[in-house]
Each structure stands twice: as C-alpha cells, then as structure tokens.
Length: 79
Image 1 (cartoon, rainbow, N blue to C red):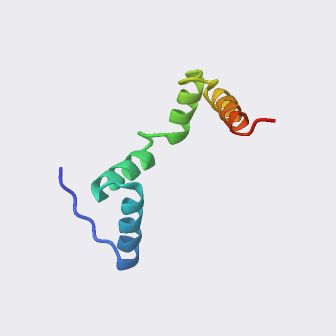
Image 2 (cartoon, rainbow, N blue to C red; image 1 turned 90 degrees about the vertical axis):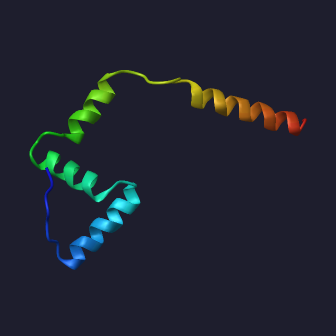
C-alpha cells in the first residue's frame, strides 16, 4: 500500500540526513519507525535475544591477535 505524507522542510531535511547516514531508503526508515511505535519491533528485545544466544565467532580472537602482534614486534627488535 502506498502512503503519502507531507513533512515540513526541517523534518524532511533531517530525514534525508538520517537515511544517508544509515544507508537506507526513506521508505525503509518510515516502515522501521512505524513498526517501533506500534510495538512490532523492539530493539531492546532483539539485543537481549542476541546476548542470550551465547558466544559468537571466536571468543579468543582478540587475545590471539594481541599475542601474535607482540611476537612479531619482538621478532623485529631482538633483545
């Protein structure tokens, strides 16, 4: 269904800035806003769901990266 909405120039300008910053269309932005206001989309619930899912990826990746970097730096500068 198509919907036409009139916005004052200031609001339209802010909408355009936000959509450019987020890399989405005006339609996507408006649909997302409507879903949030109607309670169909809850960002806090989504975040909670992701956090409860457990560890993602490689939990030790940052520690291993740091150790590898230290080893390479020490190899470049022998004591």
